[in-house]
Length: 60
Image (tube, rainbow, N blue to C red; front, side, top):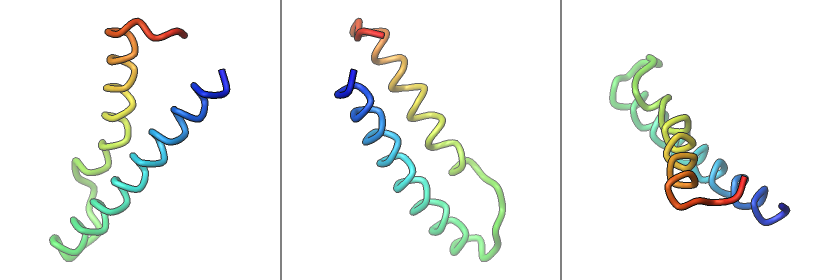
């Protein structure tokens, strides 16, 4: 159980870091703070992680 929690924490942490980097880059490109697809990176990563866990039969 502990390894599974740490696995999810590291996965979410990486997603947050990537999302923050992309949001800053896109705000610089647009020269404004606007909502775009970059805000969906973390939810998409979580959905992919859940789908992969189901596909490979990971314990719940």
